[in-house]
Amino acid sequence: MRHMVLIMLKCNLKILNKLFLSALLISGLISCNEKKAADETPKPDTQMTIMSLDPGHFHAGLIHKSMYPDVDSTVYVFAPEGEELKEYMARIAAYNNREEAPTAWNLQVVTGDDYLQKMIDTKPGEVMVVAGKNDRKIDYISAAINNDIHVYADKPLVINTAGFQKLKQAFAAAEEKDLLLYDIMTERFEISTILQRELSMIPAVFGELEKGTKDNPAITKVSVHHFFKYVSGQPLIRPEWFFDTKIEGTGLVDVTTHLVDLVQWEAFPEVILDTADVEMLDAKLEATALTADQYKLVTGKDAPFGEKETLDVFANGEMDYTLKGVHAKVSVKWAFQAPEGTADTHYSIMRGTKANLIIRQGEAENYKTVLYVKLLADQSAELEKAVKETLQSNYPGIGLEKLSSGEYKIIVPEAYAVGHEAHFAQVTENFLKFYKEKGMPAWEVPNMIVKYYTTTLADSKASK
Image (cartoon, rainbow, N blue to C red; front, side, top):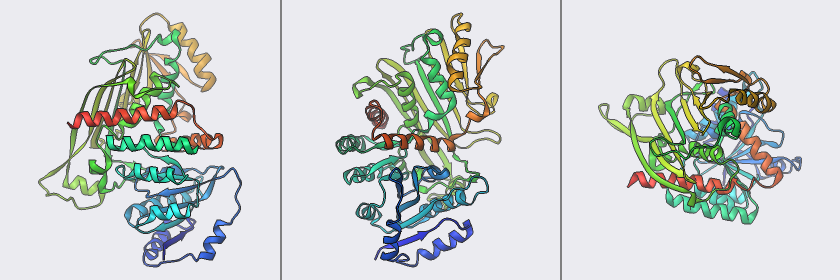
């Protein structure tokens, strides 16, 4: 008999945890008649029902930090029993029980070792959301597509060249079946990046994107992250597999997915790319060493190594490549924890023939992303016009300030700086739009293929 747990997440977190622990010991809490009654509840034709598969990464929960009118409040969860499922459920419970704008998600949870097959057999929803172990994600994706289920997946979809070959087949099958296969690219919704892209498309200000060189790329993106951090106000407990690159992937295939995506999205907006456009010049991996105490702090588990030993996690990656002849450099670095008062940082520069567009996120910016413009010619009037006529029309309140350094600072009202967690709702709204329209822009799928070709090619090159 199936192990099935019906959790109506309208109780407080303490009660939910007790229910969860008890439910692990009880089978068949929902009768077939009760399941049938739930399934027969009418819903609007426009509503989408989500099935969350093996939600092992906290991003699976962040999707549900907001409610969506076009998404059924009932979420069907198929997962193995364990701590990861419990963390996911607790995160949803916290959203449901917060004082400000609480959500109203109802989880129907099905557990057991055959959770994937149970999802395929019952198929209570149209869309599978998956955010968890990266080494098996492509197999989940392929199974969903082969069984006529749309896929909304956390990055990365694949972490090696073998997975990339499967991904190409999955995209081909999705096209044949008119299904969506879409990855969650939150960084496209970061306001400084949006404005950097928009200014780069104004020739009077930016000119044209330089071709650059390996030593002086036309576009550079550097991201610094930390293993220990807070999410939704709580210390983030990472699963132990997060530190196993055979499961999580190396520093060239994980966070780099975002950066490679932004290179494509900004340097060649809405241009259909091909894998032949990519030439990988150099790629390398480096390790961050974790002590036993650090490992226990971030996982909640005793380290599988001695107190005087360290665990080398190859989470740091750097790649130099060209895309359609334009030199790009992508770099991701991980430390254990940010120093007091600091945070994750992002640096990006796009070099044009008339201006450089630079994003910084350091101490001077109070660790918030800020866009600067360095003019290479006397086009200050053109920049002021672009801000007033283009940026302000799309984003009212955007301003411009000339600094003593000679650079210009783009002033962004606080309302646009919603933060990383809020970007998940924005990406989800985008996916819902594609779902309603029954398709995506022509460039999205080809460019996803190029993106994962780039990351897995870099990993292959660095691992030789």
